[in-house]
Amino acid sequence: MVKTTPAIDDRGRYYRFEAEEGSFLSPGYSQLVLRDLYQTIEDRNVLTIYDIGSGRGYNIPALRQRFPASLLIALDLNWNALSAARNETSAAWPVQCDALTLPLEDSRADLAVCTEVLEHVADLDSAVREIARVVRPGGYAVISSPNYLNLMGLRKWIHDRRNGLEHWDPWGGHPGFERFMVPRLVRHAVEPHFRILRVRGAGFAMAWIPLGYRRIGRLNDRFPLARLGRWPLFRSIAVNRYLLLQKRP
Image 1 (cartoon, one colour):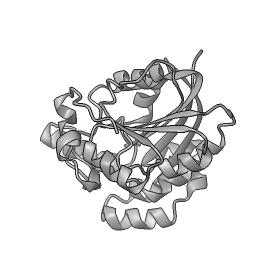
Image 2 (cartoon, rainbow, N blue to C red):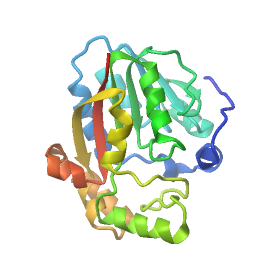
Image 3 (cartoon, rainbow, N blue to C red):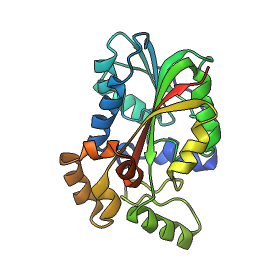
Image 4 (cartoon, rainbow, N blue to C red):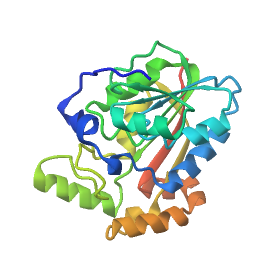
């Protein structure tokens, strides 16, 4: 286990020092979508994988199943989350760090995974640039983030404007910084470094029924309507968007 003392922006302070279990939740449908995207990666040379913002390691089992021979490194700002993940599974080597300053060599990863993290970083473009730096040319990245082009996003927008901060999580999971994410913003950050191979969407009930979030979330986990997320219209209005990327030469 590698423990460091990363320098962080004030907006990341909550996630390093104060974040509790609600900050590391991963909806059940997320792994269904991620497994689908992993299956489309036909490159057999995926031997080194970085899970950036790994938290409690929800992504690790699916990655280990799909790429059993790979070296898996879990990176996160919060040491307690990494330790908890390590206690539950020894399938990945944990490293504490900030996503904006990854302690990794250039072009070493065959695949980088970064799910539900980019909305929390202080500088979106810099974080994506760091992901691109550590992925080899022709290598892959899978990222996911919220999409607020829906009723839940409208509720967040109103709440943020009232308080003058982008610190509201519509589902009540945490009080930390959360950027107002839309597809155009993500596309602008990734396209200088990656080709977008596939886009998926998921979380329709959560996006359009902005009341009773926890109960809706549990229902949505059971009935994810995952196939709808492959269609352009539906993937653009879901509350989560997933991108499979390939690094440009």
